[in-house]
Length: 388
Image 1: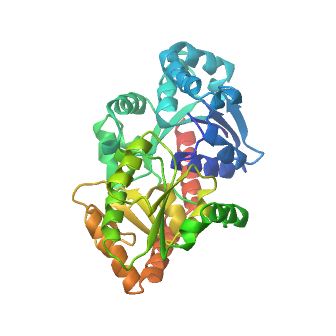
Image 2: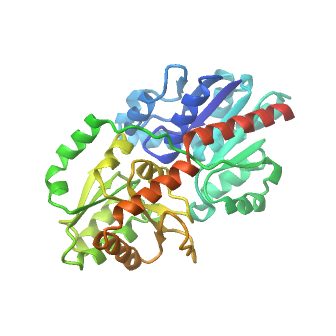
Image 3: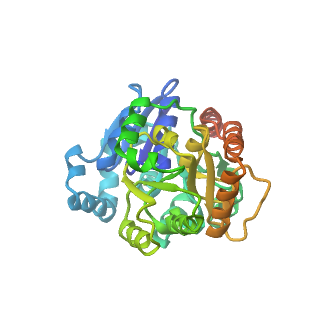
């Protein structure tokens, strides 16, 4: 099979990590091309992880990623001139020649609408268009909703990864239930790169060695989706416990960084929070922490939470769903920052942190393996091929 995967950028996010693992797995038995629409400064690490069997196509030159504001203007160009540019790319990159065209994230979803309409207009029935939905309906804005609703109604298959009950939102937005596939994302059991780990430890040696407990998150610095503000409120509660000496390593960058820095100052957490900036190889970097914090949707932790658990770390989440309270889940989540702080203190004081971390790791290993995810995609391809 000839597979084209399309993604806006290959920066440092969960969707990009999934893309690397799927492309590498599929390229062992299929012809796989990855189209990266826009270069960004942070993409070098993930691109370097692709194996040599994966053909990579860039729609913008590498030099643009270093030009800051001009690089962002390219994003507007892609949207404003989407129709003529979609026609050009459809012909230039022979999109009509693939068995599967698989779009990921908003910009790729937007272009896939025009590519699929061109395929229909040219009576090309050989291409199956697929889209993977990497988030949840309550976490996206109006423009994304409009793009996804328009795109999903056309797709031969829509894959969603987070919260099985999200299927109801897809059906409500016009997707036939027989075209919906639930494939939870998975992560490989990656070994720690000791060089990357040592470099990170050396960079923040003083802060890490001075703390009894090291907390961490690796995330885009966006308050609404990633709940960094709730994590900081939890830290403010932790600080009230004078016997708990902790540091929080906040890894990543994003549009809300100034607000986050202001909140750190207001809460008096300057001595407890370290802004580490973007990091490569998060699976190795996470090995330095004791507790990993992340935003959660129901029982789902996102890719970084899975990576941390596979790394043997205790994972806890800030819950983004209203009225979610399930004491039986293996990875705990909290809507109230004070409750999360109390849970951390109890685990530390009662010596239960190692046991809890072990439960997190076992749960993820049993339910969110990269192998299971890749096999589910293969099964979907076979089914779609039989229906073509």
